[in-house]
Length: 497
Image (cartoon, rainbow, N blue to C red; front, side, top):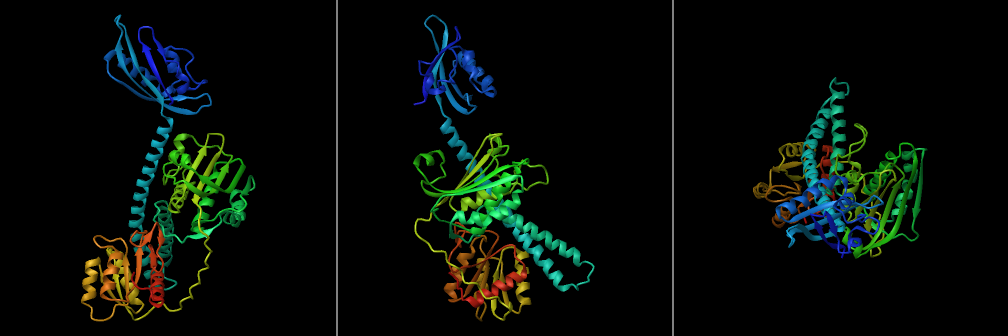
């Protein structure tokens, strides 16, 4: 055990470690002698006053001494010690403090990792909720902008203003999409891929992004294992990490992108509580830039945190990487020292069974988006509901509407004719969209269903992956996209499930 007894003789000022100080301090870092001053000299400068005051308080008051503090190894590495003690009286009338000191660096690191993971999870929930609310608003902005443009002549004086509103809405939608990626609530289409092939496909783009003063080097293991990810999303991870490395090397340098097979064992999992031991495919991105200190490293995956000057970045790049990797069942780790560069390592679970890449049959392009079928629209946000109803009625559909599940079931029961399609929001108070679809299909077998949401919900997806056979439309959407998707679902025969 990395611990040692200690006794501080207050009268003489000496500290005895019982001959076990090497266990805690190490041969090169232990105090040079047995004085209190020598002990305080190896304590981190920021903690020296607290330690000294704590010891003297324990000696004078007789209270317990409970101190957590840092020490600096000769190589500059910070380690954490905890010192516990109690004052005791000498028979001659002097005083001393006795107790134990132990190295708790590993425990402290695990606690900090857990706290950081919980913090990022809480921020993710907040970001996902904010993005969901904004997506409802953006659906309204884009929808009404589209209606206005459709009604305007090409030379209308306000047309350019409406076009600018629409462009701003599209940019805002891209921002909320990044937030949803961070919050792991973005819909993904995973496939079995080899990361080396993904990197090779991006090499030309990466070289253009990095510029002439940065050398790009790629290394790949032979017979690299496959992993299951959304290729387009993971391309974003590679690009974001590369651009982050480029920005850390303003005067040039080298960026190394490496892929390999690895096995994370139990000992690694002990040091990284979020990791499940097993085989992983690794992506490593290393730069020779200015590096990061511990304070910066603790915050790099937070959305909107950036060390770049104002206007040079949103602070979402690494946050998006974090969300995409976590949603894929992997984890990302960073190693960095100021002045020595930075390495990001991404670990993704290996596909344990052979899975062939399936080429999805391209859907035939739809020339018609209208129809005469009856559609039941269920949406708790009035703005989005009114837009959807208006858009579908403009396409010739007969439209019923309701603000929630119970109202939708009541509307369906009072309707004498057939209901061909249910268009429902996923996340609603009381009864969610999946529960509504199940209830309605029990009463009206064969009804088709289209789910709509600003983010994924576990009633429809599992870990962000859409269940097979379910139709889904992500908010924000424009009205033409809604009409095309409705027509496609009606023609495809997807029923509620």
